[in-house]
Length: 257
Picture (spheres, rainbow, N blue to C red):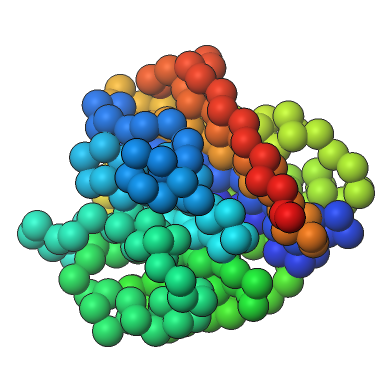
């Protein structure tokens, strides 16, 4: 995942409203979101990175969920690190609270390349980055994360948070409004770009909410709606390479018994 915006305990109907884009190289193989029956975890709903065997976003039927973005720091990249997608899927496989799992991750987090991890459960929502090395409880409100710290004011993240706030201002909204937010291709002006250690040209190419380059870009968009009773609506749209043209859509509901 490279951009996530979400409403946490801030909407009258939904405890969680999450809209996320996964950006990746087009050649890197992945599997659409589905329940992980073949891996003997039918209670987990997630896509899969077929190279690293992890995931960028997943949900357990018990209401626990996790999402991951890379922290962009090219000069600090490690040789042969473990896959970061393992962090989300291992949390969902284990019977630990989000806080307990992050306490376990923290001492070994420097083995990984830079990451942001969002983990939610019945007790709350937590953010951890191995760049900052601190576990934060996320306050109710509209938040966003890309390839830097939580709520870093990058132009695309400011735009996405503002649009999410507008869309969710009323009790009722259309999911299509959220997908339109995620498909915004507007790039930031050169004088507003962050300096993350890549070239200005590449910095601008990845400054849009929906990314499109020759070899890298937005591969899928995901919406998660969770109400206060724990019922979950999950929709994933997978795109053709370099386009918002739909390749595949998958929709799931998890009803709290």
